[in-house]
Length: 161
Image: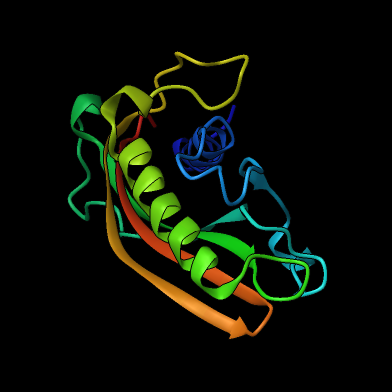
């Protein structure tokens, strides 16, 4: 059985993969999850992304006996990659696409309607998500060909065990 944290990561990825980007006139590709270790300026494609677990707060030292009161807070980092320059988006177009994607991602992941489910076969499964908020987001220009939108999310989940 998957842990709450594992399903939380799957939920973020699944929600992005099903997201229809608002800005599609400049770049029409959908979001696609990839292996973070496969990303290079030569292989990255715009709107590819990865979800990485960053940290978790330590459990309650007193130990909560009531299962309904057990919860954990986890930090996730979402990285969305964009090709810019040769064979990619132009500088100004890239900024427009990234800013709109940023808005779409935050709107989707904050929406409590998207707190359940983690893949197409389990769309209504309760994964225990209580809240999900952006802690930080930044645009990193790795080099002239690869830009990365990095978002840190703080997520509170109920822990069944």
